[in-house]
Length: 219
Image (cartoon, rainbow, N blue to C red; front, top):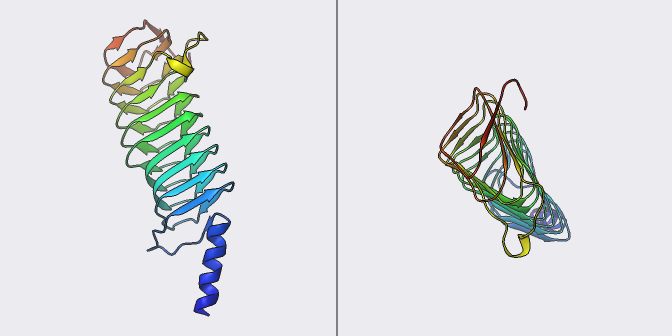
């Protein structure tokens, strides 16, 4: 029976599906396949190329990285770091990242109660916070940013000027700071943006943009 159990575990790893005991912190690496971490379980570093990663409810993982694939954390799950190239990042309700979250080309969305202790950054793709928290600031180049109602960002916001491969003229990013949202720190814009701020929001110093105030739930 022990040999049979070990064989099942190996098959699970080959096909990118984790069925790990709570104390297990094995690393999982895949090429051309997706990875799932079972609800309530734990895993170590997870990586995949040409596949997605899904961390189910209440699970904990260490570093999570994907190339050509999305990353999704379901409700109440946690991770130390997240990074993806050509893929989205979705954080479910009350999920938490202890470090940073980065996407090169992909949207990032945080559900109510989700939080990132470190910096949230991308190059292309929208960033949306829904009653969520960022502890280390937000940074992008071409992404629209919505700091939704009752969200909180510490560490400010930076929108960088496109350079190198990302140097082109396009539609300016739209930055929305929603009702009762708080952005502590400097909002620095190194390229043209449209900045819309609710009249009930609280923000820090603004550099490189003109604030357009609005009232109501949305601009």
